[in-house]
Image (cartoon, rainbow, N blue to C red):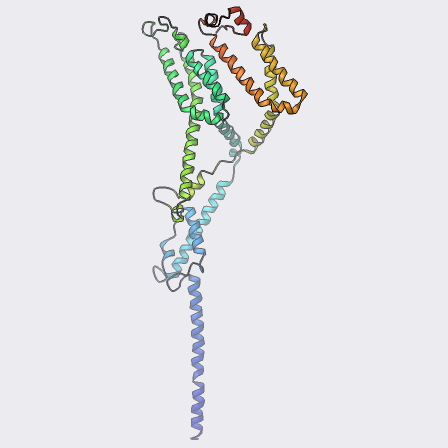
Length: 409
């Protein structure tokens, strides 16, 4: 018994570690469980895991910056402050709901209704008219000079002729639009003054040796508002061209500012300020353009192809029409017919030669047409037949044979 007691004591000594090993396993299991809970809640030693182990919160912050929301404070607090890991999870859930809501709104805005499809072609036509306003402005300048014949409007005619012959006509017209608007407004002010009901002594129309009506200072007795209204309509097209010029200047300056901002450090390029919008939105806003209507795109392509094929022949036919019009044969009309015959005969003989001389031919036609227009325009002023006869020695009958004749207005 005495020997057995030590054995039992020894057995008891061997059995005593068993409960400690079980408790050690239980503590290890509890530690693993707490570690999983810490990882699942986003906590760690400092309340957050390293960036390599938790990329999702960074993506959520990026998405929330784009949607315009900020993360709540509980999502940025470490564990043990303001509600622990559960508070951070709740903040992320709120942000995800906001992101999903903003995404749903964007999808709803992207859908087109039938009214937008009907208005889209009209908007495309309006934008095309605005972008092509420089052509209409050039035509209006010539129409103004012909409608109201005077030396002041002759300036508009020469201005339009020079702009027609410049290769980059659009850029030249846009740069000239501020000066054109100022000149047109001066003409409007003069016309407004001469539309008043004033006597000849108060507002004369003729000087000692100068006819002020030839200059452009004409007093209309019957319906003086009519010429004023027409000139206002002409000036409106000049204002549209000026608006297009200012808009393009602003867009270029904004694009330069956005490019300079994009070259700054990353923290500046993506940061939001209290006084303005994010810089990233400024970079992308200048590149956003409204989508054109598919119907107008197909119509524009068809019209462009039609003009490319037949416009050159339309101009050639107009040369033929100018050559045969009128009851008398004059030198101006003979030259039009000569140009038409050169065009058609060269095309029939050699297509390669026709293509090579085409640029020089059209340049010759443009210069000749401008010369005829200027001579015919100036010949309508007072005493010009006498000026031609005195300074050139050409009698009036020969002037008529050349093609210079006076027209009744």
